[in-house]
Length: 183
Image (cartoon, helix red, strand yellow):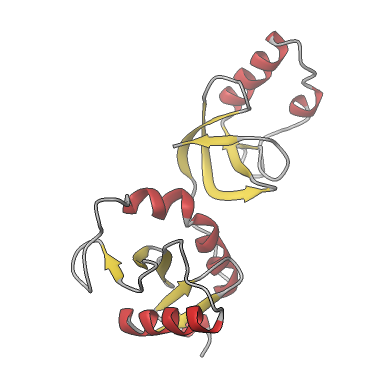
């Protein structure tokens, strides 16, 4: 079965995404995956709706399926479901979007820094490059970033060469700049 034909996908990693027809089937896939890899997953595994890319549930390391409400259980207090859905699982959501051949989820607002910089406003899709968060900014924020680096005595040529992308609205710091999203 192709992932695009299933209503759900279990995203073990960015490269290990499997189709599922129900939460129960997702739980069974998780159990088989852990047995075949001779190790339990210590990181919760998201179950993603293949049409909306919404994380509808996750599987904890003990194999329990957790939903926002209902299903096999509710989200335990120790884990913030929205935080996990947003930044942590976004790379798996983006990988699923690529697998089903549809656009990745929209960007969401964030604050971000460059090492010891102040926090700047921006947008992220939650993906990373070499461990750094991919970020997009408005032209106004881009000008503020350049001004801050100039005030620090840093070379800003690499920033000054950047222009808004095709839509003319955002400047991309993705896939090449050392940005860290503040949660």
